[in-house]
Amino acid sequence: MGNGVVQQLKGIVSETMLQKSATTDELPKIYAGQSAMISLLFGISSLSFGAIAELWDVRVTCILAATLLGLGTLFALIRRRDFIVTTE
Image (cartoon, rainbow, N blue to C red):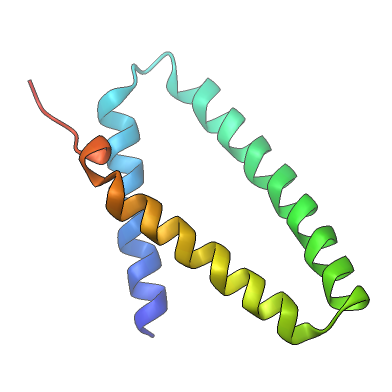
C-alpha cells in the first residue's frame, strides 16, 4: 500500500510543478510529448529487460533494475535544488 501512496504523491507534485511552470498554451504540447516519450521508453525498456532476462538470468535483470533505480534516486538527491519551484 505504501508504494501506491508514494507514487500518487509523486504524481501530484510533478503535475503541480509542471502546471505552475508552463503556460496554458504549452501544456497540451508538453503532455503529448510526455505521453509519447513514456510509451516509447516503456517499449524499449520492456524489450531490453526481456532480452537481458533471456540472455542471462532473471536475477541479473532484477539487480540491474535495482541499480538503475538507486542511481536515479541518487541523482535526484544530489540535484534536488534544481527541482525547487519558486513562486514569484
